[in-house]
Amino acid sequence: MFLRRTILSTCVASALAACSGMAWAQQAKEVKLGYALAINSHYGAAAQAWSDSVEKATNNAFKFKQFPSSALGGERELIEGLQLGTVEAVIVSTGALSNFVPDVGVVDIPFLFRDTAHARAVLDGSFGQDLLGKFKARGLIALAWGEQGFRHLSNNKVAVSKPEDLKGLKIRVTENPVHITAFRTLGASPTPMAWPEVIGALQQGTIDGQENPISVFVSAKLWQVQKHLTLTSHVYAPMALIVSPGFWGSLNDAQKAAFTQGAKAGALASRKFVDEVEKKGVEEIKSHGVQVVTQVDRAAFQAALAPAYKQYASKFGQKTLDEISHAK
Ligand code: PAF
Image: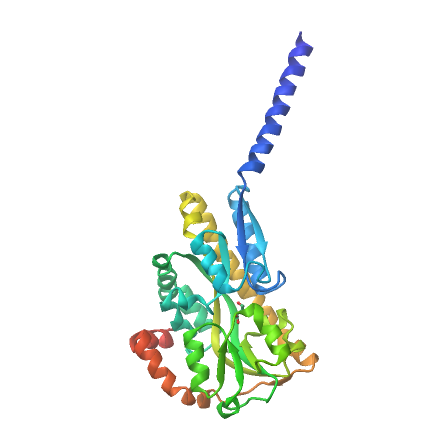
């Protein structure tokens, strides 16, 4: 009798365990996370830290599924995917973002930030946090600012060292009005193009160059398609960790906190990755035969951009530009 009871209760216990295992498997909500670059890039580092943090904090109530290397489309499609609810989470540059959240364009102004510390302080401070808050009205929930580094110019025609060298160069730019204005003002021929098309266009010679941080140049092995790189540091490039409003609305407060904390961990991981890649990236790029111009006359570029700065001031307000540039 005792034996029968023990066997019976063991059976019930195992059935319950199997059931709860199944329930766990069923309950783990899949979070599709899309981004443009490879898994071993600063994007991948952010994505991994974000997923690990959320999965741990929620006791695996969520399971991230990463879609690196533009597998879900270019950045514009990723952002639209969030609005449509076909993807739960993305990490994107500000390239296409200001078409959705126009106020974001202000961070894309050339030579606005003195250095990385300045940019991080502004984005982590009240200005950057308020900017994240502006995404909501545009159907997006932005949780943190990650980083790509400062953008530099590369091309196949000329070793650029002064603004005049840009004359007539066909430079791929992101679909970003602030960047387009800057390169047009400098005398280049800016060609807005989604990232997934860029390498092919450089190979075919339909464009001469592009501009991106060292982190992107290394991750995408742009030495295979570019001869010259100039360390212009013309624009600081953040990236945003964003979730879809529909998905956000389905979370309880504790889960929202886990996603926000996780996004912050992801942002930090991207900054750490960028710090590392910037230490040795230029040497690696040189080792692949790219001619690198390391010094440019920043003041000459700023002077050549004077007409563009007038447009930026009327679009974003001189007060805002001053507030950012004077921030410590
Ligand atoms: O140049 C761009 O479009 C972006 O910097 C990239 C490469 C997609 C990374 O976000």
